Image (cartoon, rainbow, N blue to C red; front, side, top):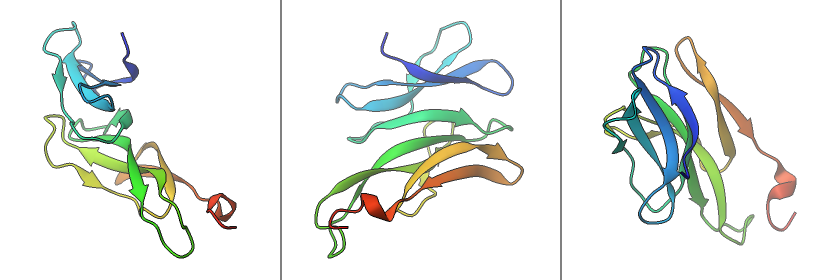
Length: 127
């Protein structure tokens, strides 16, 4: 009921999507094409959304919230989106982006994920 941003696996047998998890944040789930075998594959206190399967089905890329630390240039905590990958079984989660920028996952291309970085110095506190 609260699921969004679904994406079919390359072979059409499974679906990945984001839905609100038990701790209130959005997490990633997979299920078979017929609706059976729903599994939560991520679990954390930060939101994970906008999943996209790799063309070979070996990874799922997604956007996840990153809390950017306070610095002299940024005197307040800021939540940015970073790009991550995870295996379809939920293992081997990895961050792909620098936490100082707000990145979005643009899609997959030959050799890996294509990133769409959105960074604007005017959005930094104090500027």
